[in-house]
Length: 82
Image (cartoon, rainbow, N blue to C red; front, side, top):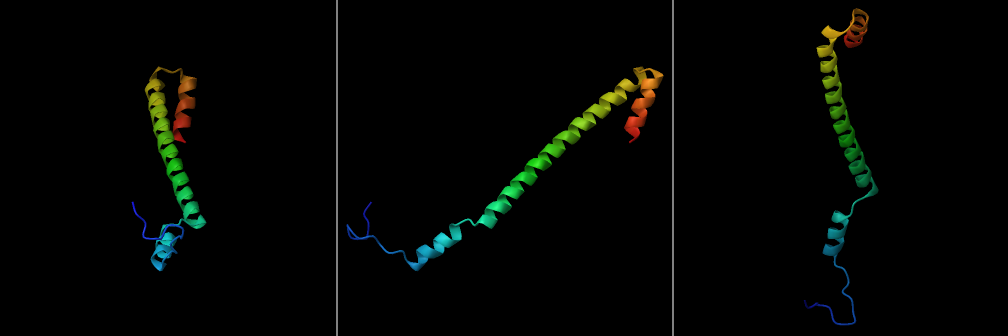
């Protein structure tokens, strides 16, 4: 590739170059917002996964309930009512 600038002299940035740079630069605020959004998405995924785990365990408790002793069944029923 050939450069339009002469060999020993660097081309001075034009106003257009400054506009492109300012539009493409990411500020600290932008980085902070992006990081917070990323963390919120990760926490949301963890919450969804834990809700699924809770639902599965509650279903297992419900299935095991009829085969439990009366005392254990009472404890499980009171737990599930919460």
